[in-house]
Structures are given as structure tokens and as C-alpha cells.
Length: 74
Image 1 (cartoon, one colour):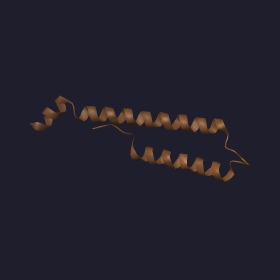
Image 2 (tube, helix red, strand yellow):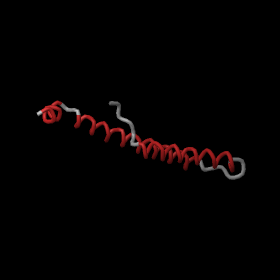
Image 3 (tube, one colour):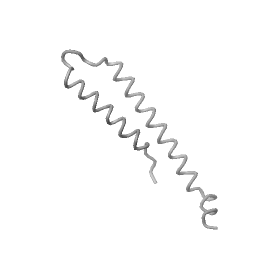
Image 4 (cartoon, rainbow, N blue to C red):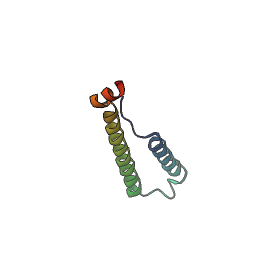
């Protein structure tokens, strides 16, 4: 299995990015979103996604380790 971020994190980050795009398209010429806000949001999304992927990889590794598989086979 390939570890991926939790679906809630994936869909939440997509919603946040689409909300920022919608804001920029609607108000971009008159009131642009500050570049540092967009930068911080992207760093936060990247960090949370990486943390979730790492956590899920550890769970997959623990569930599919040889000792766990031997216990299930008995």
C-alpha cells in the first residue's frame, strides 16, 4: 500500500486552495490576498499533509510487519 494523507486533510486543503483562488479571482484586482498569507497557508498544508502521510506510513508498516502477520496467521 502507498501511504497518502488522510482524505479529510486532502479534501480540506483542496477546499482551502479553491477558496483562495475564488477570492483572488473575485477580489484580486481591488483587494489582493497578502502574499505572506498565501505562503503561510501553503506551508501549513504541506506540513500537515507530510505529517499525515508519515503517520499513515507508520501504521501500514506496523500492520504489515512480519511479526504481526505471524500473529494473524495463528
